[in-house]
Length: 370
Image (cartoon, rainbow, N blue to C red; front, side, top):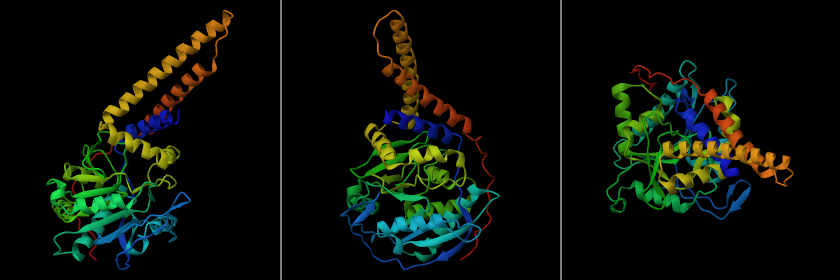
């Protein structure tokens, strides 16, 4: 029953994503710069439970977290995110970059904040052939399935060694949104999957590692065309065959963090981004190898059949009771109610979906220099 409800809610996000919803971030940076050092942590706290786990991030050359403070200067989102990073030994290694909101075009604000951080990384690491830059957003949460084995696999993979079978990644997601249309997750190795999707499938930028080749490609695209689309869409277009993800995801979007764009879906989002929910969907995507454009319609068909079957059984049971037969009504009524409620949730999600946003004309305006 829980799986049934979860998958129906996932279908809502799939439908909403087809309307190309986009995230909010910011534009003018202010810096807090700690020194990046090797770090590990033992005794990871996840959901109030402590496990003996050591996380080593020494393979990173730089780590940034993007955030937008409130007008009064307070920033509860950042405080929560830094506490989260403290659990995995990343707080002291991560440099905070604050941006003032771009209320005229929030998608541009998100794009500009990521480009600004990547430009800083390029300037600092200029001349170094192989780099690994971690970029985070303040809506992240630690996954209960984070492990050193997964991160060791990521480190090995991004080195483009012979063990990667000649595949060199431009970026590796440590978190991504799995409820988007057109997404296929292909198993590359035990802890690495390849992400394939259309340019309009917004996988998010909650946590990702970008390599030298990916960094150069993205900044060259910006230098040539400027801002034309949301940053996740640009990445999807540029890295169609070279975008990968850790499996299981070490991080995920926090269920408790309110959206800065579409707050009407906060209640639904609070369900979908619960660890027990997204880990189940992650296993289904990776295990089946099926595109979400196949999984979601199949789900909708099952819901419809379930609702029709439940109503049919309920009607049959009611008629049997009227003839004096002893027939239980609880199960068919429950089945019909559950399937119908899931279909109502789908309709509600579609009703809330915003209209597609047109692409913006190229903006070659230079970002503020550092």
